[in-house]
Length: 264
Image (tube, rainbow, N blue to C red; front, side, top):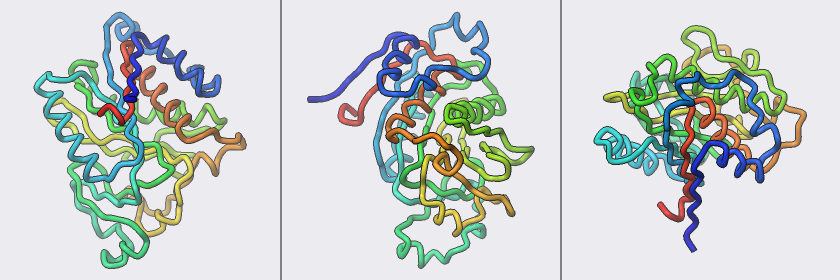
């Protein structure tokens, strides 16, 4: 039987998550969204995709972005994981890949070029990925503020597990625990519509990062929630739902529809 769950308000959405997440998942640690956010009806569809091939996800994003631009759909958030994949941003800094292309297959990874911003990064199992397909005009955000809110989404999630994370310094997008990156951001904005997004390291195989200069930043490390917290982690589905809850609250959505991949 196909699964479909509709949550009419943010309150009901957070109540749903509270049945599956720790109490921290519904305990905000930063300031509430501005009052103008709460006064407006902001709709969001959340698609829980499971693990999906990178190119398949890219094709889906392009289709959804086109539909969002044409006002055929509302803002949509893809929640998923990828098989081991290296992606290069539009600057095409492939020199930051430290392993020959011919050896990628031996480590079970793929390499793809994209039109997102940023440098080379890794996506793989045990990483919580969000791809927002949203209209920045409708939510009243510029590009810089949008990226800052993506950073805040991951910072708030980390704080639920007692991990003090912060946004990077200038030219160091993403979220860091001291000098180690725990969450990456790479976005594309076309005609005011976003695609690509964020990747938060729950417990990925960090050895994959040894084959790249992550995000083109030399002398910086990579870490994960598993490495940084003393808290026993729940199931990854729970952490991904907590990340969704953080996104919903920080971006001020109050009309949320949650869909499982079986109905898509």
